[in-house]
Length: 387
Ligand SMILES: Cc1ncc(COP(=O)(O)O)c(C=O)c1O
Image 1 (cartoon, rainbow, N blue to C red):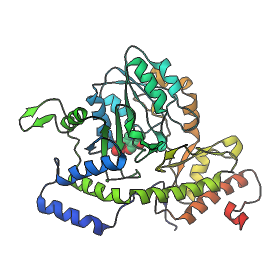
Image 2 (cartoon, rainbow, N blue to C red; image 1 turned 120 degrees about the horizontal axis):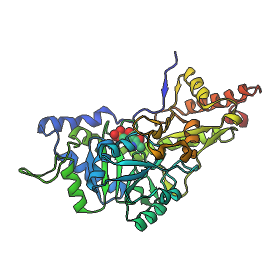
Image 3 (cartoon, protein in one colour; image 1 turned 90 degrees about the vertical axis):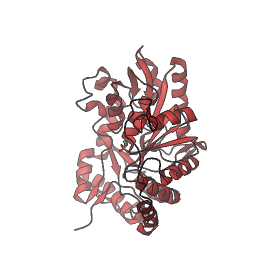
Image 4 (cartoon, rainbow, N blue to C red; image 1 turned 45 degrees about the vertical axis):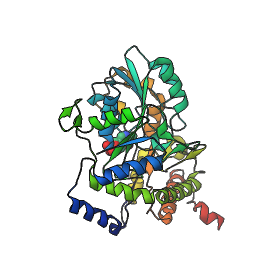
């Protein structure tokens, strides 16, 4: 039987590259708590990203939960229903009420034009997500935040290394949060970070992620244990050496999908984002059932029959899940774009080791399912037609 192709597969360096680091960790017996690799990784990561300060975390969710603590966010926070559920869970863990605002149809990011109407006297912050690594409208969001004196925390879990007009996307807002989970373009197995812009905030973040300890005998705040360990940090140092190649390989795959699928009626692709250094984390397609001939779920199942395991990111919407669906802002009538996109999306497999031939095959299947749905003869791939 043919091997299953999943939506992603982590990019790892050769084991031989990692072993000397492990040997050093074993010899030093320094496993966590600001070890040598932790310090080195924080510095090298800040340099690579082009940001002032990085605080490493055990994972992105703890980084999000802590980021809200750092700025003492309370009351209501405006956010998107079209994301991974951790975005909203971080609010819940802080006793904050999420207020969902609809997304825009172009990149499926929080619609910055709709934020103002959702602000109440209890609103303290905005928590947007750079969905699929495409930046949300950071300029408009800052404008609204400045007028209403709101803090902005970006969930940048998908946006590792992304730059707009040469500027790191993590330099916008008060804080940005990254995830280095195994599914992300840059991974330390589990891991994450908060990006901040000044030394004082970095100190507070570092207290908060280490039980609130300021020194051996002083606890200054009710911190948590969210520290990254030395094995994660060492892997991060190595991954940084490969990340540009990883993104280049992902680009080749994304470009090929785009080329192969751009003319399939009823399959909608996100447009390339202007002036962006991009990381190609996902390749979402949106299925318009009327034009394509079969539904998104049918296509999803048919691909699985051929061992292609795409994922419906993000379906269901966060606002559909039991902890949130009772919220007034979760009402579907206020979220028409998100409700539509969540019914149409499939993220296709994309990872550096995915052979380009597989991308051709997946694209051919998507074209063939359409032609069989409308009873037309099977099409050849675009590449075949040109040869
Ligand atoms: C948008 C978004 N936010 C937050 C997270 C949580 O990150 P982690 O898995 O590192 O806890 C993820 C992914 O895992 C995510 O995709």
